[in-house]
Amino acid sequence: MQYQRIAKIIAEEGVGGLWPRVRNRLLPKSTSADAEIRRQVVEEYHRSVSIFQEKVKSTHFAGLDRFLWYHAIDLRDGVVTPGVFDLRHDLRHFDFPDDMSGMTVLDVGSATGFFAFEFEKRGAQVTSVELPSIADWDMPSGEDRELTLAELKELHQAESLEDLHYLHLDGPFQFCHNRLRSKVTRCYSTIYDLTPAKLAHKKFDLVFLGDILLHLFSPLHALSAIAPLCNGQLIIMETMADYEESKPLMLYIGGASRSGDNRTWWLPNRACLTQMLKRVGFQTVEFRRHFHAVYRVNGSAVAKTVIHASRGT
Image (tube, rainbow, N blue to C red; front, side):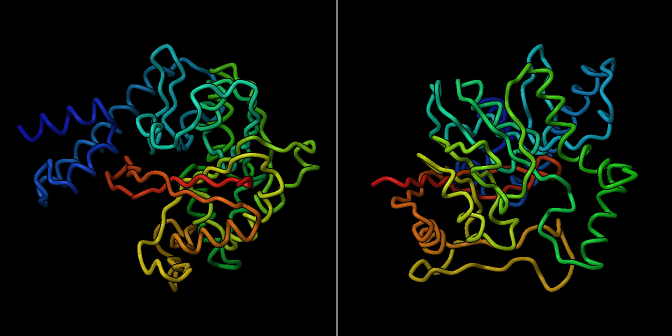
């Protein structure tokens, strides 16, 4: 009975819909329930990989079999990329306008492009920003950086940094872009180097940062770079530190040595992020929604917060 209920929730609400039920005891809050959720999530992920590979087996696109699919994206005709994150059921948490016709949108840290293509589908003119090179990720210099890049090259069977960048970030986006016949524009830049001149002196009606700040050495520097580009609303999806709300604090989670993904550094609490946003010119800051993003490779879930900030009153 429990198996059937879990399967029903996955089908109707996506894997992210499971964790609130565990938390709220709609499913038994037990080790066995959690293990069953993870098992089904991982099984579903591997099924999606197999289905995708079968659908595109006759497709000739360089490196397709070695891509990292960060997002699950519906490419029509029954083809869905096997993203390690499937946020299709979670769009309701972001409060994006249903009709974005005439809007200009900047999607920073776009990866496979799920949000960029979603904005375009709603009618927006979209600029997608990604790094010029994997080497531009914020990582400690020296052996730490070299080991991280070497591990990624081995994972993708990449021979060079250029090859790695294509397989990890740019190739998956370009594949989706081609299949969707998209008009999304790609801009290659670090967030720190984004300027009005680099973006044809545009100011954007909406700027979106999805899971960016936690991967940056300097979140305040990044927000300071973004602020002049935003003519309307800034929407952020971020993992927040859940502690000590009376003081603005940033929790360092990078560790004393290499472990995990080696590219996650900071978690701000609400007071910290509020003050940073106001310091760079955003007058209103609203913490709108909370949901769980699920890493489908192992079934783990991470709590995410959606924040809306505006330069106007």
